[in-house]
Image 1 (cartoon, rainbow, N blue to C red):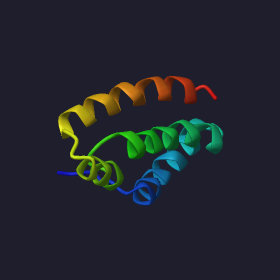
Image 2 (tube, rainbow, N blue to C red):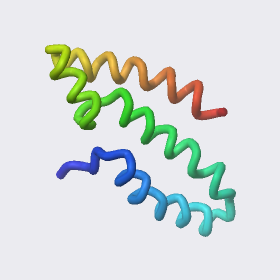
Image 3 (spheres, one colour):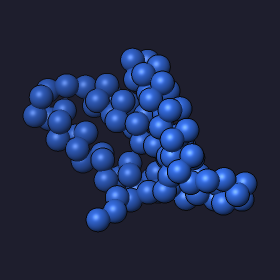
Amino acid sequence: MRIATFFGVQIVLLIGIVFTITNRLGGNVVKTAIPLFAGVAAAAAFLLPDPTPMLVASQMNADFGWMILIGVCATIPAMLIAGPL
């Protein structure tokens, strides 16, 4: 089973989860959605098999294993910084 890799599709699929969480727990929709969508944006920007990093890796003749490793190493600090913002 594979998850959707397009950013817009991921947002549409996850918005229902955001509304369910905020309705059941009584939280703020924006405060719940921003960290979730920041994670989706980081995954779409840095991690394979999203189409854009795959295209860049293939055009640069880069090793996909190294791309995944570097993407994870870049995504974790980015999420730690962007999450609390």
